[in-house]
Length: 279
Image 1 (tube, helix red, strand yellow):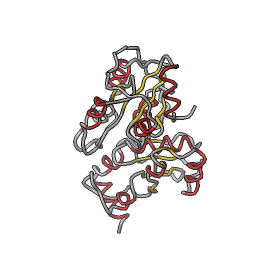
Image 2 (spheres, rainbow, N blue to C red):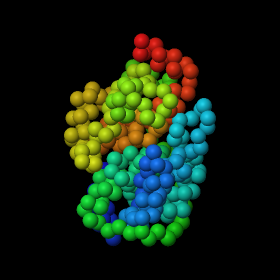
Image 3 (cartoon, rainbow, N blue to C red):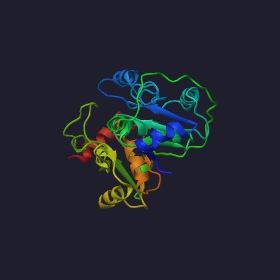
Image 4 (spheres, rainbow, N blue to C red):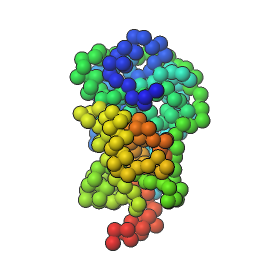
C-alpha cells in the first residue's frame, strides 16, 4: 500500500470505507493558532484536528530537547482512541499542501505500530481545487481502544549515525543548511557530515512526485540502498516528509533523529565540532 492517497480516492473512501478516520494537521510555525482556526472554518467532512505543538509533540525541556519532542506514546494513544482509531482503522492525515505536518502524524502512528495510515497527496489545497465537499461541522466522538503495537519506524541518536555505512540527511532549505540564514533556531549551520536534500524538492505543484521520479532524484544525489539513512530537520517534523518520500521511492525504512538541529545545538561539545568543521 502506498503511503499516499489521492484526493479522488479519499473522496470515494468517505462513502465506502466504514472504519476511516481523517485528521486535519494544518499548522503554521509562525502562527501556532492558525491551523485550528482554519479547521474550524472548514475542513474535510468527518475530519478531526490534531495540533503540532499540543498533540503531536511532547513538553519541551529546557537545555535538553529540541522544539518538538516526541509526545508520550500513552498520551497520544489515548487521543487517537478518542477519535475512534483502533487496530485496522484506515487513517488519512492532511495539511495545507507540503505534507510535512501530515507526515509527522503519519510517522507517529507508525511509531505506535499502526500501519494503515496515509497522507493526502496535495493536501487541503488540492482537495479544494478539485471542489470536493467541505464542512464546518465537527465530528461526533466515537471512542475506540487504541492498543500500542511494536514500532514500524526507526529512531537514531548520535553517536549511532557516525558509522561509515550511515548517511545523515538534512532536509532543511539550502540557506539554513549552509548557515546563511536561520529564522528559527539561535545557531545556524548543519551537523558535520550531513548532506542536504531539501524536503520541498520532493514536491511538484504541491503534490509528491511520482515514485519513479523520486527514486531517480535520490539516486542522482548519491543515496544507495546499502546505506542506513538518518533524516533530520529543525525539530523532527519536516524530516518525516523526507522519510515518507524515501519509502515511496523504494528505500528501506530511514531513521529519524527526533531532536534534530534544535536539540543538537544544545550540546557545547557539538558546537565545538561545528566550529572545527567550518574553519
